[in-house]
Image (cartoon, rainbow, N blue to C red; front, side):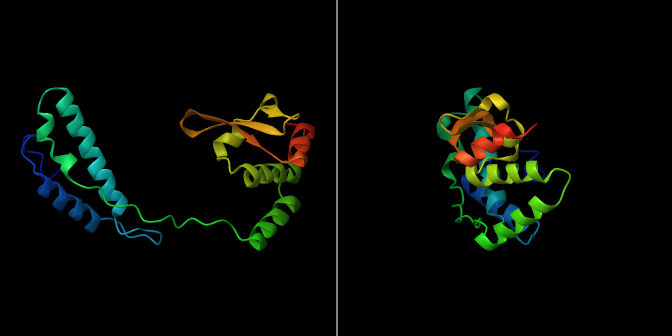
Length: 165
């Protein structure tokens, strides 16, 4: 850090960390979907907590001397993400089904995402063996080594088996 590069790890106080978090919030790049720098401040405090946890574990400071633990993280605002309106999803489905190199596969993938809310990586990692036709389940392997069985509609399960990959 530019401001603290010359200081020892046991010198910054909780109030100095709070001021630094405010400076980080003030310098954030303003974007249309920005949240006022809250995430930047939250990540700064999380990084400092990690740094100080390591300093405690390595014996450089006592646990009671960890100033980052005495600084509150900014509360997260409610998510601004919303589901697509039915009309918009219908428009997207129509375009997907009528264009591209493989409209059948594209439609199948769109239906998979709509029904399971899986991530892109989960769809890309699918194998034919990951579909349980009897129970209409699909095995998804996603971000963070998350593995889950997800139910799908009978038509999607049948179409997934019939589509040549």
